[in-house]
Length: 163
Figure 1: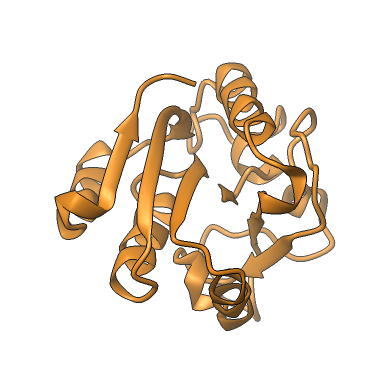
Figure 2: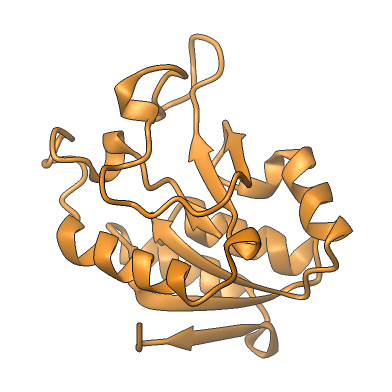
């Protein structure tokens, strides 16, 4: 599952003070993980602002909401969310459940928000095993990322440092 790899967060024109990710390396590593799977197994999730509020999320239809240039998009499994947890989108949750997914690799941004909260939900609500490919996850607030990981039972999580 590829989370929030959008122009607003990792694009060249992003606010680098807010999102100071090492984007070239991150995009390269995310693409390597995408290539490791059959195209139909890859799921993309975009953050989209809903209504007037929505925090630091781009509005639908704007370039900020587009996938970052050079991201490999290999499937039509593209979902939107308006909360950090991707599984707050019930349609996505049903898609994963209907496919009988037991294990989910998470990549993208941010390790302390969308990636972390999606992982917590995947384990708690979906009974899934979660894999983190650390070089393919951009994280700004490492303390938040660690708190999310502490919530996950150690038997349900694997971290990899190889791309």
